[in-house]
Length: 492
Image (cartoon, rainbow, N blue to C red; front, side, top):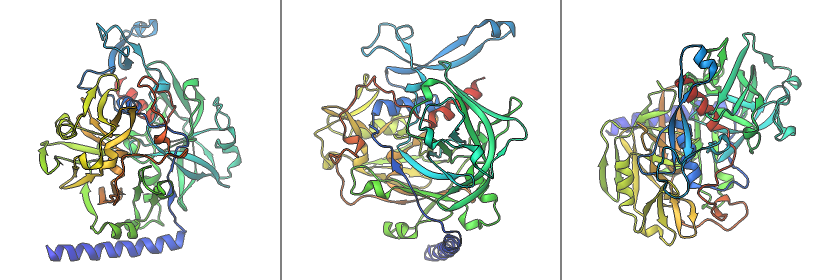
């Protein structure tokens, strides 16, 4: 073991040297991840967003669920077939007598992206700055276009006519996303240079949003940047899938990027922590060595399975206050586009059994924790990434106020999903290294010394705002639209 640790240390030292030279030569720097202004965290909305994102149903009695629908329009009848799809619906606030009939569709504006942060990149020559959702659970780069039907931040839309390096697609590539309620977003595709953290990425496919339903016409983001794998990219040519490389895949293919730098990293901080607004970031092409050293631990590397387009790895155990919970054969994905940590019912129930006064709520569709709880009363939860467990810091077990007497839990059930989804609730507790070139996921612990249950009472703290009703989930987002597109294509 000492020999293996020494060999690992030498390898890491070599990696840092290569990355340091690259940073100096290309002028690479951190990409600040800024919390969306005025965003109020809503636990129910976060859960419903995840349901829309991945198409799962809850296993507990719940207000929101997917209902199978059949399309019997004349056009489909003429073609001699019917089409089935899942529609996200909600029942009345009180339990209905017949949940299959006493329900209403959840409109597209309620099935929104769940990312908490915006990051600035440059597109074109000269650069046009846009603020995007960075999402490791999707694989498209979508930006609001200057000649689109959108009435959103007109001064911040990307204008391809003002870029000397923009090229229209030569194969009539298009993209389109659609929700079950008929709301759509679509457009054309071109290529251009993008600049992320000082790194120029050439020949990047840019999806230009030109036609967008009114449900999608608001929101703070100017678009999104997918950091998953191109197998789930949604671009088509002549009506057939024609997935294009993601920004990281294009970065890897460039001659100026050495093997040791074919990665990106992320570090998120809770709004409860001092100066958290200034601390969250991404890097591209390099690892923050100081942050790794501050953890006092070596990076733990885990091979990933990207066959479904996600950052998936084994996660067969968890620990709650020292008690092991084994989930044989279980896997998990790491997803910056999901707020919650969604785990198996086995782990979820083991966690809340250790939290005094916690309960499952039909109205809020999730587990609630009494607002009077202290950090000392919260259990220590850790989940496995490959063969090593990582603690989810206690303060992030409390997502946001559900009502005046309860917190909405940051860890919830994954329902019928076959794998766990480790979103920001988990990612805030680690420094994540997404090593795409070597097909592995790296992590070191990043736990705050002081754990707080309350948020600072400032206007810049969205979580400090008054809780909203469970049925008010109407912010517009971008990550869900692309995830919905992937699911729609799979169901056709």
